[in-house]
Image 1 (tube, rainbow, N blue to C red):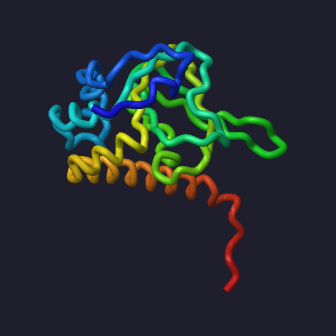
Image 2: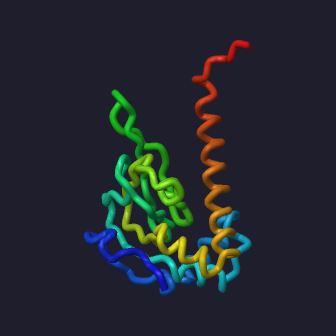
Image 3: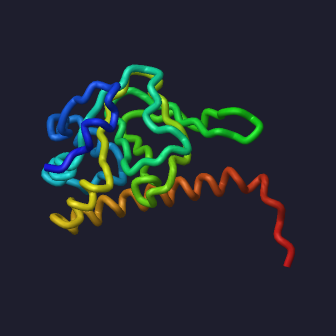
Length: 175
């Protein structure tokens, strides 16, 4: 079983391997269309590569501009997503709850975090790091590929939303 490094969130309560939360994770995934095709056995296999943590309200779970190689799957509670805006301070971009995936861009590309995520209330979450994901891809390529397809679909959805929000600010092209 591959899980996150115990030092990833030293200030938070380490709730242990995500396999201890399989019922909660499966229930959440059942209600997320992207994960709807995963059965309990597959969710259990995915969970074997995750670790769970509990955070009180007001804790920064992901910090914009910092390196990271993991994503978070929110199990309980809610998280505020903030973005630093040059000359404007920090702006609340979204509040997400159970089932939200955060930090997937850094998991995929290894780049710095694009936003900060702060627990709005006590929040439990599962962590998947790149190392364990690579082990999953080696041991069970079909399941790993399906999980990556879920991430790709989520990234594409967010890109489309961002494009729609930017449309009012884009000048028409001249040909």
